[in-house]
Amino acid sequence: MTIRPCAALLLATALAVPTLARAQGTLSTQGFGYPTSGMSTRALGTGGGMTEFDPLSSTNPAALPSLGGGALYVQGEPEFRQLTVGAGTESARIARHPLTVLAFPLRQNVMAGLALSNFLDRSFETNERRIETVGGETLPTTNFFKSDGAIADVRLAVAWSPASWLRLGVGGHAITGDNRLRSTQRFDDSLRFAPIADTSTVTYVGTAISAGASVFIHNAIGLAASFRKGGAMSVKHSDTTLANANVPDRMSFSAAYVGIRGTTIAARTSKESWTRMQGLGSPAVPIYDGWDTSVGADVLGPRWGQRAIQVRAGARTRTLPFGLPNSAVKENSASLGLGTLFARGRIALDVTGIRALRTPVSSATDLRESAWTISAGLTVRP
Image 1 (cartoon, rainbow, N blue to C red):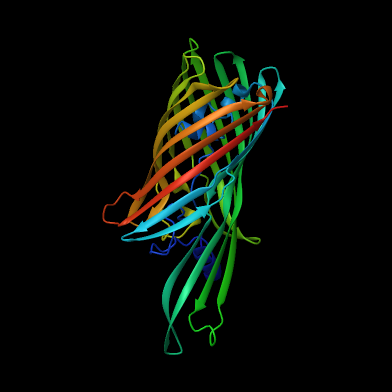
Image 2: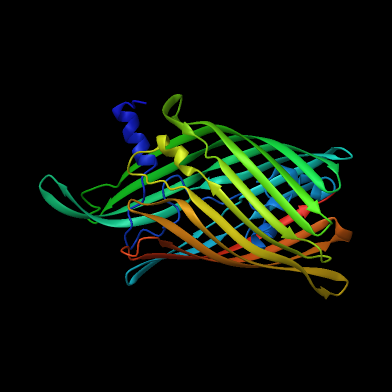
């Protein structure tokens, strides 16, 4: 597709990969953003290992019947990250609300669910020192960049459980959202030169379908798989289409042992073809396909008075979709979580802490990003 020069400039500005300098503040929020993966707090507590069996995660529609009835779920997830560049560091705090789920029964063995999740989150704020030449005069400036926005995945799914050991599900996805980038240049000599500010907004529109299944063998072994087929995706400014591509495909597989009461031990692997989004950006936006693999456990722990406590732990490794021009970015993380019930089981509270380390695959790049994430999920049943 040919893009007019003005549209190409807007697109390049809105999708610009932040310059990796001391004051940059982010390694994970490159390109179109950071993938939050649609995992619930409970699934994140196991490192993502039980995601394909989790009815509150938005990956496998076949998991919905595990809820056993109607429920409303909301999740909050602040992240505290630090980028290290050589001997310098820069810190940032990101507030996310990555997942909301409303599930309701249609009949005895049929469940429906509406999930709103962050597909890609692109929230960051950074600044950079520059030297500009104006009228032959050299002037020091500070450039501030702020991105506020995300691409969301709205999924409507239906799941059927024809037998106690078998669950099937299908879903339709609307991929939508926008990125708002504000760039401000402030001159050190503010008496003679006023600040220069520019704002650009682009909107994303796409579709996808998904299907999944889970099988339980002798009430002890669980096997699950899901697949998302991405449809067309476009980026727009007002009513003008700037570029076209496709929503990434994703295939996921998981196995779990559930033979112990109150305990799930699970492993999962998933591959997402992010390069299908290549047509939306410029050659300056490097995109990488990658695997996402995790293992973890959800165990019935000690009691707190009359209340049972679930204890979760897990580990995860994955390749982030948007990295550096000559290197993908690897993320390794460990998680620990707790969960319990209130109000006679009508309210569930889950909390997970995640420690992540993100580094370029290429050892020639002296960059490292570490992050603490606190995920909290609240489930309310009628």
